[in-house]
Length: 192
Image 1 (spheres, one colour):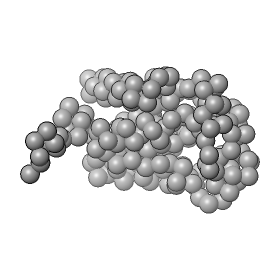
Image 2: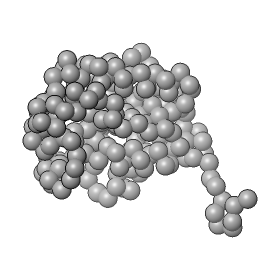
Image 3: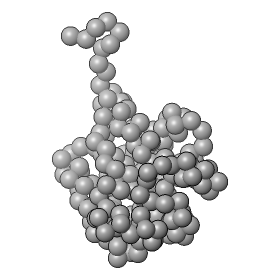
């Protein structure tokens, strides 16, 4: 039994009837994907997977050396991310994946044929990204790869069942904004 004032509440997804869904948080390095994903995980109660951890070792070594990944480098990684999404959907549960799926062709691979996958692009001004990357210590991806990431960026369009969310402001404010967009988007899908 919980102590007074410490009652356990159901995750927000259960409390507010948000149906199981896979949310793919995407953006370039330093966009805050992990922080937002952790906040959503705590609120929604859905499993969270850091997409970067699914990269084959050869990709990690290449990025650590400051060499941009090619489409061919990314295909095995995209396959692993797709498998994680497919497992969540097959289980009937929701999930949250961080992923720098900046090209539309990458998002098409990850989505497969499911409308239960929503992409959220975390839009951060370039100057803010540069500041964040300069402060980041011990990350395998050097700030020098930011231009190559921005060069592959194809901002998602509404026909992709994707959202663009501005990420200026404190983390709690950004998470609330993302959650509001998810609620609206999933509700709209239910009416189609």
